[in-house]
Picture 1 (tube, rainbow, N blue to C red):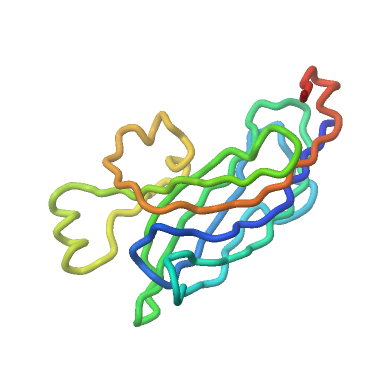
Picture 2 (cartoon, one colour):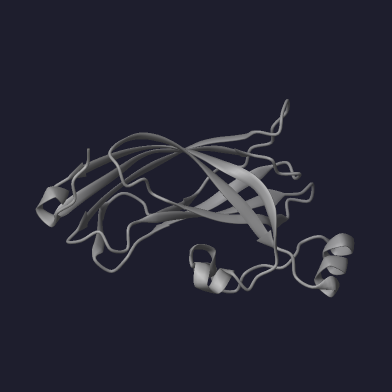
Length: 176
């Protein structure tokens, strides 16, 4: 079996209007992939930037996969949340990016977005806060379902990822 090691960190996020941010993350993959060790999901701590708008999380990632093929390559999805002055959590944005498919160190910037909803939803959001949320989180990384949503661009999530691969040449995958 081929093996994939993903080692790195969720560095932080910027470009969000809200302060006191945290991130819920999940690494998903196809049926041919098995997580041998490490956490495939988690949550960062809350950070409230004092000087600029960069929320610093430095949350570790360390996952080891085994696979018999490259179909269903792993991807990481994010939900960025904010905490208000009353300690209520509010959804800020969704995003995802593919785990890099070449060995080495990678700096990845993940664009995020949030659903806008209709006029009624926007009025409710303006007066009460909150906003529309997804019922099915698979929509985040499934383009066939996501194209029907009205969305608004939000900030970015930054990652530093080291990718180690072993045994992929058995399946005809070569890296130059």
